Each structure stands twice: as structure tokens, then as C-alpha cells.
Image 1 (cartoon, one colour):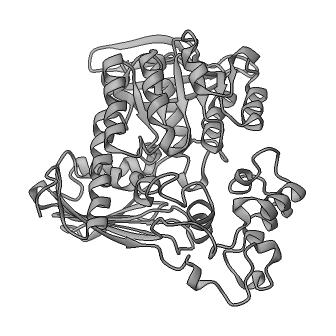
Image 2 (cartoon, rainbow, N blue to C red):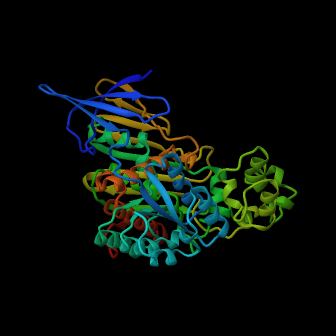
Length: 483
């Protein structure tokens, strides 16, 4: 027996359908295809048509992955969930274990597996798009090379680690006529996207001030920015770019096209310093007599988790050549970078930083990033307007109306599969890939929320903020010589 479900839906502007309201009737047929009948509801006309479930998908999008680490692996999982929409057909990674793992997950042909992205780029184009998930300092060259080959590009954030490289990537993608999506995943979080819609609807009037907090999380910071890949600026990038370009991008987005005219920033490395090392502490947690009293203990962060059966992030990151288990994790803590005492590392990136911005028209914004928090990446935002106040706690939005003096709660449906991507991103990793694949399949760059030009502008703001911190002065954006 067929199961019929009726839904009334208003077509978003990016769907190239008749404007207006649609009545959708879902014909659920067990063990078969799902078909949809939709009817345009207008004053004079009802139109019945039939469509398969994925009418916007003209064909399966073929993707190659450059960098098969945590992010490359996460984004690639979309193909396992939606094999009719996306297929991973190639991988490049210098680490044999990482590229072999991805090859086996997606049944990639041997001739499409490379230990060097340059060899892949030299081949005749054999896919529609590329996921570039290399380390931060290795973004520019593959992004430019694959864009010049005609691949649409999904590029892990940050875009690049210098202004010149960011501009080169945008130029290459623009001149080649390919789509560029930078992985500012929070732009694709349904609830955060609703913030922008509420602002644009006039729910709080004119925006006066934005206050935004990123709580990194005490063990997340120890993992990524004290022991891990982003601990040292010379090897990766500065913390505001590596961790918080998401947040500066959101503030820039909420400002609604107004240019930031001046910025100031302050920050430093706090606590994770050699002089803070407890008396008697060893250089490695597995040998440390005071480990049990340290909240940043690698034994607690990694070994205790794997003993409980948790092998996802951050445990999955520390074993470079094998799957994580008690034996391999123990060995990694004895010999690898993630077993080091947090007070004996070569970290030099900020553990806390503030950025103050003034935009055209007098709008001001204040951003804070802090490592020492219970919550991990659950952003907190308050936006003050002339007619109301909008607050966001990572789970829901509340809008207080000055006229009625009442608060309205807002939530958004999030249909992202559980355990897809980073938990602190609230399913946004899934929505990022979903949007990119849809844009490529339909050849519609308007679907992309983090395209080249606006992303470049927000990156430039990040570089200006860091310049302010380093030079201990207010920076007038776009004028390097003004004090």
C-alpha cells in the first residue's frame, strides 16, 4: 500500500521553479523509488507535474580528494550517504595509510590514487570537482592548479595563509570560470543561517553592535593548538586565521556589505608555557607522576577515550599509519607529538584573542576567542539592533522586541546525519558539501554562500586584525600607512 504525505512548501529563490506555493504529495513505495507530485497553487492555475526525488541533480558529481586526513575523510563521506549524487573517483595524499583507507572506502581505481597532488593535476581532467584538504600552507598551489584544469573547488578554510595567495586563488577560479567554495561551514548551519534571515527581515531594526564569542574548548585547544598541527605559526598559520576566520567571516556577513573601516586586536599565549610546568612533571604524559592532576593530560584526552570505545576525533587524528586502538594510541603517546606535555611544546599561537571592529555607518563588533572553556566551539552571539535584541546560544535563537517587550524563540530543522564531520559544527559540514554538490550538479554558483569575493574580503579583515595585534595599534583597513 502506498503511503501519501502532503506538504505545503514555498519555493526558495534558488530553485528555478515557478514562484509561489507548492503542494507536494510524496508517494512512499517501500523498496522502490520515491516519486513526487507537485502542484503550483495560484489564483487561477493548478499545475500537476511529476519528478524524481532529485530532480535538481542532472548527474552524479565526480570528486577527487587532495588531502585524505580528517577533513578530507569527513567531506568524502557524503558519497557514502548519497552515492547517486556524488562519487569519489581519486585521492592524493603522501601518507600511504590515509590514501589507502580512502581508496578502500570508495573503491577508487588504482590508477587514480596518487602520493602527490601534482601528479594528479598533470593528468587529463577526470572529475568534476576537487576537495582540497591539505595543510593550511599547502592550499594555494593545488587550488590554482586544479582551477586551471577546470575543476570546481571546495577549499578547506582558511583560503590560504597570505593575502597574496588568497588573491591568487580567487583570480585563478574567476579566470577559469570554476566555482570556489571555501569551507566556512558555519555559513551552512541552518540555525546560523537563520540569524542572517532575521537580520535581513528587520526583526531587530538597524544593527548597532555585534558581540560574538568562540569558546574553543580546553582539550580541543590542547589537541589542535598546543600539541597539534596548528600549534606553531611558522608551520601552519596564526590562530585567528586557523581557528577564527569562521567567526570574522560571520561578523562580516552579518554586517551586510558594510565595509570595515578600522580594527584593533589583542591576544597572547596564556598558560601553555614552560614556566607554568608543574614541579616534577615529565615531558610525556605516559611517564608523568603528576598526570592524574592535569586536565590536559594526553592519557585523559586520548587513551581514556579509546578505552571507552571512542575512536573518532580527536583520537582518530593521532595514529597516522593505523587505526586507533589501545596499543596504537599508547605507542603514539610514547613517541608522537600528541603525547607531549602541554608545557613542553613549541606552540606560539594565541590562546585568547579579542578583535574590535568598526564598520561603515557606525556599526561596531567585538569578537572574543578563548581556549579555556567547557563547551567546544558552541558559539555565543548577541546582536543589538534599534528595535530589538537577538541572542544565539548555539542551540536556539531568541529575539526580544523592544515594542512588545516579548521574546520569540527560533529554531531550525537540521537533517544532517549524526556523526558527519565535526560535532562542534552542528551538522554544518554536511550542509556545506550538500550545497557544493548541488551547485556543481546544477551549474548554479548562486547556491554557494561562501564564494570567492566575499570570502576574500573577510579573510583580508582577519589579516588586518592580526596586523593590529602584532603592531599594537588601530589599523585603518585598506590603508597600510595610516596610524
